[in-house]
Image (tube, rainbow, N blue to C red; front, side, top):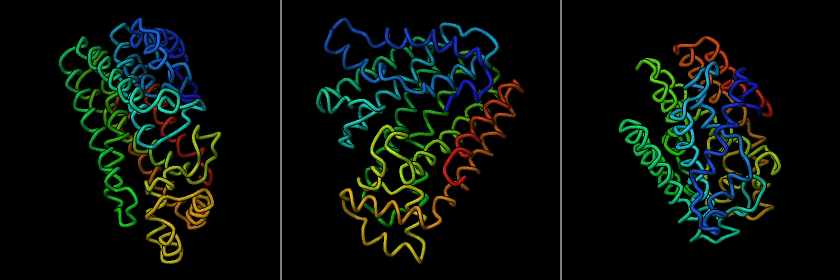
Length: 325
């Protein structure tokens, strides 16, 4: 997925080129070992989706990003990177972005402390952008933690409700997407109604993004995901497609007998097959389409028709390229 192409704002490529050295500069300490750890996933690449959203809302792809715009984008990407460091420790992951995960290469303790360092740098950068952005990022960190705790508490629970799932992903994923858009609008000094419209877009976009990720965990490949397929199922994280299947009178009982405990590889594949055959993927795609419609509507309330069209296209593309969509 080429986000810049989907947005139809080629000027963002130049903004990304300017962003990369700032990202590295923001985490380099002069300590060779720590620098290797903090830049590990930066070097592995990534879509830079959250900073792209911040830069798109700040510039509409029609003007050069200011240093404040770029620093706002850096701040949100550092929060995202820190969350990956911490998530991989909790998940005991071995791969991330098709490279060895930080915890696998350097150990859990180093990964946790390095993630904390990335959060500290993000907070320091946000503080330099003003009290509103600093408070917003702090609040977002709270949302991320609440969402993650909600997910951990629901692990291996076959009675997890769709409402509980929705609350968890709104915190752990959608909150940072919303904040990315909001920070871009704030660094640009946009009118308050535009700031709010972009925030709504980001939140809805984040919900699509997580539902998409959860669908791909069932029907995607390790190459597509950059991590083992079915990992959430194996680790007791029962997402929307799984919850829809569990509620199905035909496929639910068979799936229930497998879940509630860690799964080995054959059990994982069997569970994925049950979910894929149940009709839950189609139902989950329908939920994602509803969020895409919300995102597109919010984008239209923004100041730029060109950006609105690009954001709407981006939101819908997340759904349209899913298998079975």
